Length: 372
Image 1: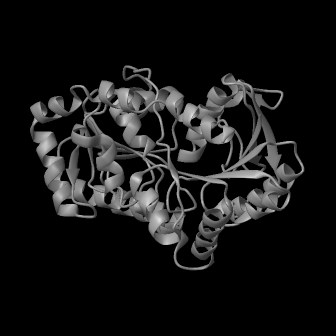
Image 2: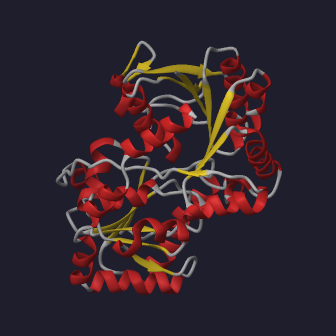
């Protein structure tokens, strides 16, 4: 069976949630006997962590092809999805698997050629603030309508998304959650040298820096509490340069707030391994890989009470009311003042999440849809 993946930036990568998913999932599908090709955007490059893993346009048995595009905000993804869809339509693929709603605007093209198409909705992207209410948001919503009407199968990450498609389009979907692997913990070394960070000496957030991730709530709450621990914000812009400038303006002159930019590899492992607790203040999620990663490291986790978070973490996290800076500040203070509460949240978190979500289970469920 031959499958083409369309809609991501580049594989292998952990630059975003979709890239992280495919970098992990595709090699497992290859091990199961599927011939997988990922159409990478020509404008994006593999980051240093993965450079040595790509040989002759192959990554762990996954074929890598380029989808022509231009490196221009708002258009790179749209053009790449169409050029990839056209190329895949002429390829000998049994299934073409689209990822994210925007790229699904091109899903009708391979359908014209009689291809079987699957769409994975990683989140209701038209709701993301960075796209505003103009053309980009309307285009993504159009992609949602196309996939709801024409995709042979639709995968969603949560029960909330399943209910949304049923109520909005009377469209049946299949819930396949993201997975998580047991991480490699690291003692503080790189982060001590670069940022002066020590174990349990900081609070961390690992995320793309976009408005729906609620990073501004965290900075405001942190400034209210001044908890005596540093705040590490690990992530970078995602076509959101103005938002990132606003965040850095809000943190101006506060030496205890550290922006690392995009990090991966051992530096990221050290951030997770040595954090006092992690924060996920999102207004909107599909299924957060940052949440899964935090718990897999056995970390205490403070996150917003949106259903996409509470359904995954259950009683293994402390929750604050979505968008409520005062409640977030109160919970930050409670955790910083009560080491016993942090210890209780850490207890059993890793085994709980690793037992609940598995990439092997994700791959097997995806494979069954391909066979269907």
